[in-house]
Image 1 (cartoon, one colour):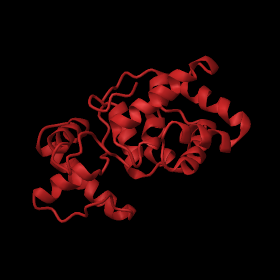
Image 2 (spheres, helix red, strand yellow):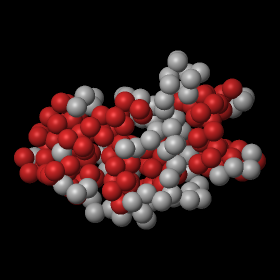
Image 3 (cartoon, one colour):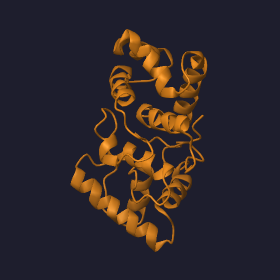
Image 4 (cartoon, rainbow, N blue to C red):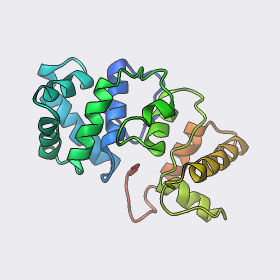
Length: 200
């Protein structure tokens, strides 16, 4: 099960990496804890049909994307049609989850700059990237930086803010992963009483 509180883990198994990137794609619109529980239930309920998360999802694709979409809907995931299409593409992508780049991940429908960076940052030691979620942006605004309230859709704007964050992490003497989680833990209860990270 993906642990949203202790999300950083540089020693994940292949199965855990698969579950982590699936989690990243599915978490849009839900809090991390709820998504983690729903994904865990889905994978546990169907562990008899596959040895890994990707194999389980591949099984549903025998009936096509609409079947996978229905499964996601049955487990309470929102935007299930779009997410099913993204998962279909992800499972068939052949990406090496240990070496793929953020750009590689962003070729998958439903994985943007924030999700790709969340995965890479918290699965690979010394990764130099930042997922610009509401917590990071809130922290930056509180500290006098002119940044938007929501994750920027402009690639140039995103990269500019990301460079600022990497600089601030270095100034604080932390890795990007440490800096990201420290801010999230500091802000997770302050932003609209959100208890857990909502990353998409």
